[in-house]
Length: 101
Image (cartoon, rainbow, N blue to C red; front, side, top):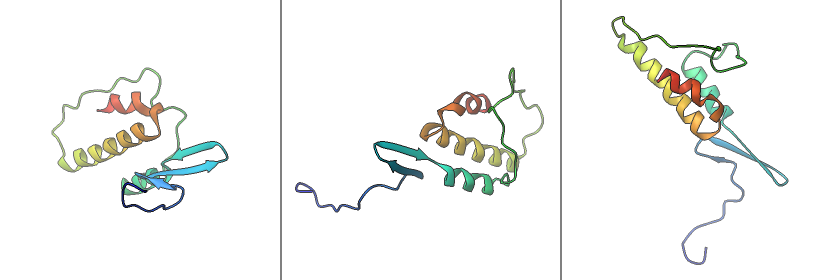
C-alpha cells in the first residue's frame, strides 16, 4: 500500500464468481451461486443430481440432423458454463465436459 494507491477491503469473500470461506487455517472455495444461476438460466433448476458426470462406457454420437440454431446456442451456453466451473472449482467434471465439446 506504500507503493501503490489502494485500499484494504478486508478478507475476500468472492472473486470471479467463486465464494471464498475461511475456517481457521482452511480455505473453502465454491461456485454454488454461479451453478444455481446457470441451472436457472438453462431451465434445469429442478433436475435430479447424478452420482457421476457420465454413465460408464458413454460414447457420444455425432449429430447428423440439421442444426437448430436455438438448440446450438443453448448447448454452447451450457458447455461454456461447465468449462468455467471445471477450470475454477470442479476439475472432477473435466472428462465429461470435454466429451461433450
